[in-house]
Image 1 (tube, rainbow, N blue to C red):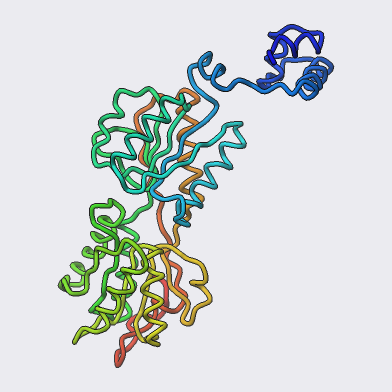
Image 2 (image 1 turned 30 degrees about the vertical axis):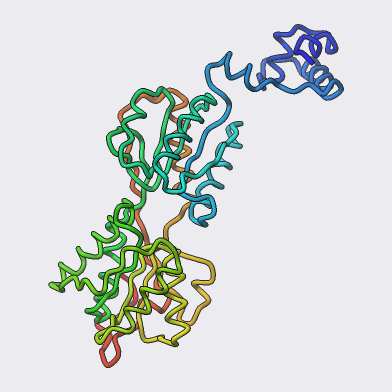
Length: 338
């Protein structure tokens, strides 16, 4: 089935039929109706490959995240898809699985697909290979190395510093830190914020209270058990990821350790209904996705200004777990705010 067949059935030209199919508003309503009826009656389907070859790019953007299964990235993707839908764009979503070679291969594949733009959560340390591309790229959650581009992130270091300060103000001096590998930018920045707060309070960073190998909740559970079994265990725990928080909280509740204060970087399901409810640094993955999409659309619309670095501030939400005072201690602040 060809476009000319649709035009013949609708008693119009192929150029006018093409305008209707591509959503051009400059077509008379009656002509639009005839073309749409012909498309339906004949079962015409647009040849997407041919269209992308004519226009140079496809009506599609590519999104590459670390893991599609991660609830945080799932929310980011959902917001990007919604924004793209409103603009009439399709979205191809894939994950790099923290494999540098896979990330490079995916980017290359999407560019061969002639996507209009890319939104990437980078894992590869060196992204200089993107310098040769004309495809607009926006990075989310992390900064690329060796490649200037728009980036949308959270204030990871400032947020972590806020969380640990909060625990210190309630009298804690032994605060444990649970995170992913420090090779990951977000974890590295959150660890830096943890160290900042301790140094401000003239407290040492105790190596036995730092776990930076918690790639998932299972490892976080094991490390939390190790913390609690120390001769001098922590009185508070700062978990730098919502996934690691799941492991931390499970151990505390299994052991009925409601005397250990806890703050989570990022919310998670049922965090607000536990007892005590979990104090969190509130981050909005939806906002992250929306701002990333807006930056990409600006580039697609011809914005050639210098790269924009958008940093989203965080808000601490006191719910109870972060306001527990050390056993035998006294509360040192009058409220739960920071």
